Length: 477
Image (cartoon, rainbow, N blue to C red):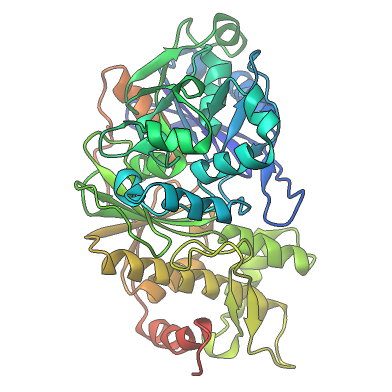
């Protein structure tokens, strides 16, 4: 048995898998976001830890035999966050998250200071990434930075609490924009520009390497073997790639989670020169990963459900799918509720509805949101392919993949069939568990493989969405 823990934006998910990659026990706990000012997005690191504790307490109560058989733990987590700890390893302030947009000016400063920045890190600086946020903190909260003794990513704060070790993996760390991505080490010049140095940062390991051992008191609490090894793990995007089997060059996945992620594995390091794309190391040694991201996917659906006073999103989606609305009768929605990354790289971009009439009802608005996210992912597909990404097979995953309508819309928008992941909600946690198995000498993927359901491209939907794209991009139809 192997335990994978994914510290996401909206929840922590934990899964125990067996030697054949089958989930045998799962648990989760919710997380809340804070937006204290416009463009700011924060969470308390203590909340991550409490959600992990709650999830593992639940697993220990429900599946003690499975927990007792665990041979390794893997960690996955939301990427790009900045967690500052003091000398006692206590958080100094709330963590700045991946969808925080306050550091636009600092992005420009990084490019002014380092002309070869993109070639070093793999992409242009964007506000959600760690390096510009650290520079923002150095400028606007210098006393906070002066007190900091450690700077950690989300899952690495949890690792510190689990093992006492300050460690990160090279895949997740490459997305901080503080690293020489091809070389796999921190870049001292970038650190200096951001006002920090190597002493603030964790030791680096590979994703499938042991990073430490579980503390004895925690092993006893959760019925885990004493000294259970904890693997390096990876960012949630990389772990999701491992979880859905995107572990060879040309393999890709689209995740409909809080954000919409389009991830393509590559055996070459191809720095993204613009268009809101980014390239990092994959959790699979020897591979890199090209990303396009729509910042609001499931978040946009949750937003419209809240506006409509419909907290039961699953019931709302069932109604919309049963209605069978045509794209020709729905308005156009641009899902830029938190700005946008790919292809606009603009944290100030805002969402819009257009084409509203007296006939527009609640279900039309929901379908417009689904279509808008699909069209945003189509923009990401175009950006990736125009940048030379080779895409041979695409897996659809994430909570939104459970909607047959949304899956059909995404396939129609990008013009390629999609393979549905076997477990749409636990991909990153399963990937983390697989990395734990690899860290203790087992295979990365033990699953023999089976045919997954395929969502084919509906030509009628493709044509209807193509007609909407001009309006979506703000042009006359």
